Amino acid sequence: MVMSVDKAFRVLHAFDSSRPSMSLTQVAAAVGMDKSAAQRFTYTLEKLGYLRKDPVTKRFELTVRSLDIAHHYLHSNAMLQRAMPYLMHLSKTTEETINLTMMDGTEIVFVSRFMSRHVLNTDVIVGTRMPAYCTAPGIAILSRLPAAEAAALVDRMDLKPYTPTTTWKRDELLAKIAKSAVSGYATAFEEFYHGDLSVAAAITGSGGVPVGALNIAVSRARFTPEEMEERFAPLVVAAAGSVSQR
Image 1: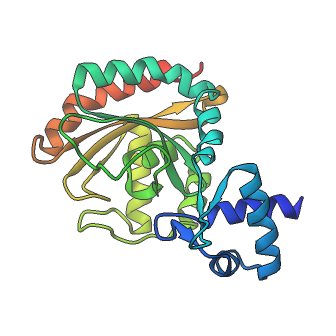
Image 2: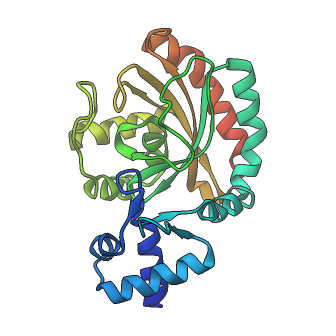
């Protein structure tokens, strides 16, 4: 473990929507290092082009170069490359929001997103994270894991209701995962966002291991949950199956 690399990434990760820019003192406090160490790391990251220091305020912020790693990932991930034609086809034929997500720990991460003209959650972009347990992609991925492994992941999650319809109690959640394993897809009706209906199917790699999920999301104002599931579940199951490795 190279601790200096770890610290450098901790500095970069300290910047987010709640802290878009920080003084040197704030960087040190956010990362948990002394001011002299923070100065060395911010200076190095500035010279490498990942941080910018305002000449007047002396505050630091991320630069556009921070997108480079994400850009390389998006253009080198084999699953994403396989999925792209199917994502584009679903987007064109359904005119609804189409997402490709992957699991990271106990969260799902959006790695590709085609927005509907019927705009849903405009704050959800590539890179957005959500709790796996209250999203259709998360449940779909969990449903393809061995039951004991899925339960162990659930036990690591901070389970709480985001809406009145969130499935968040452990036993009910495990039952939902088991049901999705049988049906081959998962649904989430207004479990994280009000007005959001989603259906997802897992994408599997070699050995049937889930490596991601494909989902379609629509507005509750335009579909009932029953209509949404009947119309779009077969589409996501077919597309996810086509992307999966056999």
